[in-house]
Image 1 (cartoon, one colour):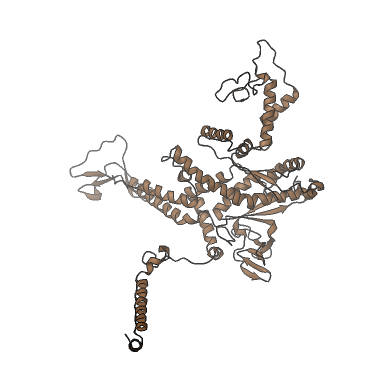
Image 2 (cartoon, rainbow, N blue to C red; image 1 turned 180 degrees about the horizontal axis):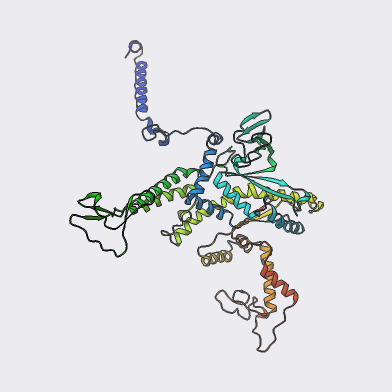
Length: 557
């Protein structure tokens, strides 16, 4: 007790006791907190031995990319050029996301307007590429490849004049991310520019600062001297990339998390390859009393380049050793664990890319039906996210809107349709490629049970398989009409045959009159010209039609 406590105790002992108790409790509490402070924090926030050298900045997404994007992009391209697993990963991602193309179909609410738009689309899709090397679906694949390899893709709208002889005077120009001037970062009176993208005061994209030529290309000669970036209005540019953080302006290459792992694995494989080559180069060790001056055992010669003595052995050769001579063949021990280490590393690499190990490496030695199906289900969700959350909103939909606007400017869409509030002029249904089923029979049986139990209706089932329900049912009706007229009964016709392959009962309402057996000698009905045209149409299919198996989505303006 100090002097003040003793003085208080002489006057008010109870008050002095409270002061002493409070002081002791405070000292005990502070000492406890000092000794056990680590127990009241996250392990990931500690700064002890385990976290030594772990530096994590609190910068935003744009600051992190500002000094790293060019290096990430260049190294990603180098890996795709020279690393087989990186090249396969990009191919698998592009192939599964796009496949043979994500196809649109107008859904404006007016059958007449839909027919006009759908009739014009193939002409645009076939000639939309500025170099005229790809169609629209090839550009989809190129956009995904560029986005995965470089982190982002730039597509510029290129309106054309009538002299271009294009049915739809609109084309697309695919640009690499290098065209966007990353060094252009500054403040403006009415906004700011961040890594080549200009924003207004409300945070909306206003322009893109693009170079006239590729900075790393051969066309670097500018008549005005140097390469100068110029602003291009944002409504002329489609900037396609995955948004991983709020406020992110530029895209990150998809190989970024695994670049070092791919590089290290490549070096390890090279070291193993060189070790095997060295082992194969040394055949035998010869020990003799004369040393290197002794006679050779095999057929001697001289290397024409290095002039070094070379001895060769031939199949079936018998050589007699002199006294004191001894030969030992090179038989190095095998290095174990190569396959296990490589498989473990590739599993982590493919997980970082977002691919199943088997799909990214082609190694199917460890899979069965259940494991393959389970792994592909998760990957399909990832692919669906790439399609519906990135590629379609950022590339396909802007292209469709600009395509429809071009038709309006051409006068191909009547003005009364634009004034009709019931017509959604930019509404469209996108249908993506199907995923191949591991067991189509089981999947079809499961879908049939869902329809019969009412958890899935017929129209939704047809849409899930990538077809337009109305067109599909109309096509089935035309097929049935032709079959009935020709009195042909197929095993796949549920009106006449059950799912077990048995004939439908005669009293069943599903049985058609034409399903009665034809009397011998009865002449088959002739095929009219209209029937022949209908059959030809069924065989040829709709122009540009494809086979799909992904849920369709309708986007409205």
